[in-house]
Image 1 (cartoon, rainbow, N blue to C red):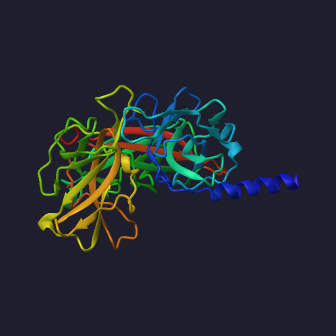
Image 2: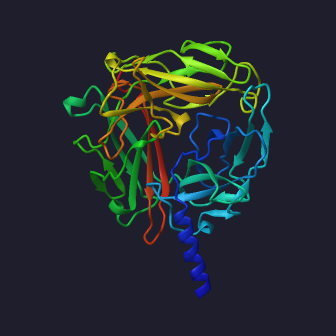
Image 3: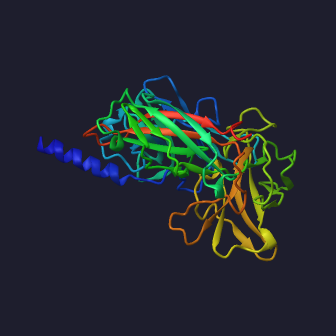
Length: 425
């Protein structure tokens, strides 16, 4: 028994030490890591517990050789800290699996090896609801981490409804969107709902501006009502996302200024993007920051699509830099991260911000955001680059977590979706 306890606590310590930043890529040869609902590149990776739901995992290795890539799952709490539990408590079967399906690229100047897998596999199955990090690593060695991606496993025990309204605060009444909602938690029957129930609200499935730690305004039996009159649940409206169509490098779509066709590589120069914060709201269909890989020139979008270096340009007002702000390119294709790889550099000679990305053929949504250099929370803002409008179409997701008394991990027991489409028009 003593040896078993020592083994358990040693394993817990190792698992806790495996904490990594979600949606991050750690090596330069890996490009376009995607994890999505099977058959739908725009579908967020969500699995219903004990269902036949499946996810697709795709990524490219620019070394264009064959490596031994493996994956595993890391159970996390509602705040994405690792759950301090044994891996045997949330995975049935093997703790890691090899990715054996790969294909060399064809009809592409950029050489790469495309890897893919269909998850979950019967021999490695998540059996606990909650937040998960999918971790891909080399040679069955978890210290050789390649990239991570978020995924959710849910058991929908909590029902509810949500409503979007105009904020009460006059200063943000035309720029922000306010939410009210209620939850029925009778199926989990918490002893203390204020402590055992956690709610996280996402706008367009973004985690950087998620609203957390919300307490219900009223608790009536097993119904929790979140209808505060103090504008507690308010999101900036933003604008519809910008786009660039890269499905063909030969056909130059409307957002492309020019293309440089080299013998071994392609460069795409986008048209200059300007400040939209002072423009009136304009509705058009977008994908809320998402992207998908696709080509109009071949058949298979995974290994018959090419890469190009794509140059983004943002022209600030008066062609002058912001001395107190950093500006970033944001979108699903960047992993949503605000770091050195997405921060734009100011070109003083041309009076514009610049950043380049190596992108696979497809259709991309993106936006420019600013971060105040003195803000310790590094909160991105659309205010100075894209503008905020109450009319903007935004998708909202309410995640409901429950922790049983004595449990060591949060369970995901509710997932509600709503949209502002047609609400403020």
